[in-house]
Amino acid sequence: METSLKEELKFPVIDGQIVVCKPSYRNTTIPTIKGYLWEIHFQFAGPDNRYKDASTIISHNEVPQFISDLQMAYNKMVVLEKQNFSGELTKAVRSYPEPNLEIKCSGGSVRLLVWISNGNWRFSRSLSSENVQSIIEKLEVIHEKGIQMIDTMVMLEE
Image 1 (cartoon, one colour):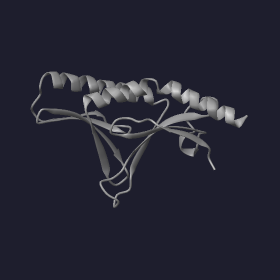
Image 2 (spheres, rainbow, N blue to C red; image 1 turned 90 degrees about the vertical axis):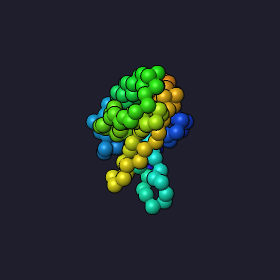
Image 3 (tube, rainbow, N blue to C red; image 1 turned 120 degrees about the vertical axis):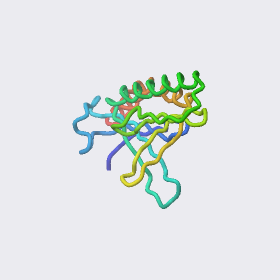
């Protein structure tokens, strides 16, 4: 059985965990830290029990790019909010890898849609600019949390 250490990230609107584990077959090309890696796991439930949950993983070496994509989306959202943009707009900010990010303006509201797939269906969560800013702030210190969790795993091996 694989040993892992997990902690809820308590992001607004979206469910996320930081997970520390040994590399598995799917992530052997990702550089490890003391023999471990840390990842962020996102999971979105479908609209009801007929749908399998959608999930995606961001490895520790992809987190800086994800933060950068969120920051770019946040900056655009703030500009659109200041302009009181009342038209309709959909703008992809991040198409690959998941989670996909899309700015959506409708009826004076500016939201960031975060999309992930379960293989058959795509599910989204809608974030305000305040939600996005909060997630960015939590992610900016996540590396230190990952290292602390790795140190805990190393200590448990001794």
